Image (cartoon, rainbow, N blue to C red; front, side, top):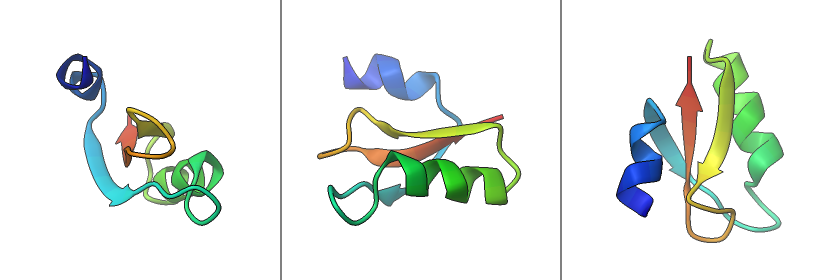
Length: 53
């Protein structure tokens, strides 16, 4: 399932970490880099921050 989800996302960079780097931080970083959206994929505990245009 992870490989199917990751195909929807363009660029992944930071590892998400509960209490430190979560969806808000990921979204903020993606917007700052010029993307339209960002989220932890596949999830907030084990995922990476991935951005889409």
